[in-house]
Image (cartoon, rainbow, N blue to C red):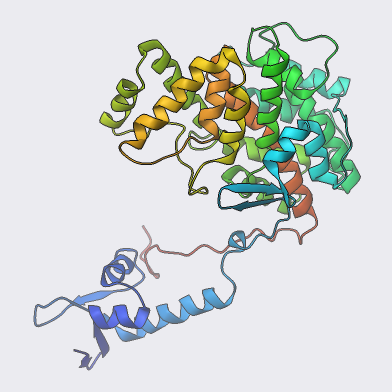
Length: 411
């Protein structure tokens, strides 16, 4: 019933919910946030609400809807399309690109639209020296993402032209920043002489194992597959920074900051540790059971954007299956996938594929995170180039205030 008391029309919970177009539970959520006030019904059958407040909340919702909503929900991009169980770079199937071309070729094509076979990226002496000094000054326990962030900042300071956002200037910065980030990392193994591709240079920063052409080819494919994946958290951070006209080094730093969380770039490290434990215990079932018993998700399985198989994982598994040295780790990964499928059908994602590569080649657990960050730098630059062509500072969503309703007494 509707209460027409002298102090104004009052609505029951059901009536308020109907007018707002929400569930009754949501009406009480508005009360807890201070967006609505409630009063106990004199009959003792629930709460009543001021119709004026309810109508004002309805009007506010309509204004927000008509204004187009949050700009971050409407970012047009011509870089990556994810469609069912496939994904495409500028309309071309990404897995086919990765099988045919190298990381630098795909990155440069993504930036320019022109494929230059055999293109190579080179680190300038001064920014590289600054980046190496900065990385060497870090504590020994620093992680790879820490080192990459510091290297990006040091390289930026050494580049007085970093604020030039002309397209050709940004492309020049991109082609030197990626090799600078890689070459600033400390070497673990012996660098491969005579090879200047990013994958070969990165290999000696990830493992002490002797570089092997088939394995390095897998690493190069992994870099190519990971260049971009639509508006992931780190990419959105990059677009926000580019919207404020941050220079390319700062844009990449923003991406690295978002990547440092455990739910984004670090996921492959969890999968690495799990596979290593499976191989040590010789039982995927026991390891999976431990994860489930502890209430943890099994690492490396499932992806919210793919209802079926992750095409990046399938592409990497395909080439890893041809390497005898990767057989044990690959079988462990497949056993984890099959064991978990008895409980819930989840397919291997790219983090599990990276874990197979890192375990099989004697890399540390964070190697996948390092490869992910280096690879994604190219995608971040592509998104920055797009954002530089948009109106500046457009990434300014309005907050939906849900605090106490003013005026409030001074604390």
